[in-house]
Length: 391
Image (tube, rainbow, N blue to C red; front, side, top):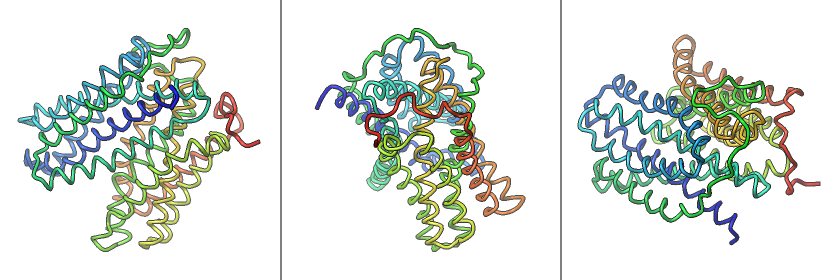
């Protein structure tokens, strides 16, 4: 295995550890609710503090990576992220838990920006698209974290004990892989201030595409089970089927996105991804049966898979901003899609019905295709053709 391949494996291990930590936190949310005797409304309010921290962390992460370099931020952020997780389980009161969740959200995006900056640099050195495979490892870690969480619950581990186990696993991964996280070359040009800057037309278009993609992703994360319960009216044992189909397809899709992007172009992959989201949700809305809806959610997962990795890959090659700041700009705008999408679904469903809400998200998928198909969007074409592209 050559040096670049070893670096790819090591960086993938970091993406996996971050996904494992996040999934482990999510797996014990019901236990957190029981511990503090929270109502659904109180829990919903508590959970808002983690994305609040994420939003706060985005401009800080972009500045820190530009100022200190992605390796320094990766190493600091990794240990801090892993060691903050047990604090969630140890929190004695919600007043202690709130600042811990804000910190955890901030550190999550510090890792997001710094790791993706490393991945973009490695992608350039290898001369081919690899970013999506890292996001695939993050998704795979989600399955692993959910399985580990189920095991920890089965053996009777408290959230604090569970999180301590994950912290130990994380530290082992960090220490094993840290030698391959390199200090990138100093960026000579490109904005890099702490204050978020107004994106230019290039980044704004990419951000809108990522925004719509994250809106669809948030919809599937939060509402797929509800859709199968209330619209599909599936057997209780099959309510999670749509979510599993979506998550499995998204994780698998991220492992093939790089090869498809190398075979065709990033703009073509994004165009098809938007169509898949539109078709998948349309099938689920028009034919709300267990088989059709499962197929539809699977197509949505394949469509969502490539949106964020390819958007990041394009944004990281901005001519006006350093990669870290460009990623922070796109992440900030797109993240609001993830935040606003699920509540919007609920609000529209309250006014009309859940099928109508899903139909609107289907239109958002079509919007991705339209935005990436406008001829003036020449920035969506890769900077240089992949050496693996078919002649």
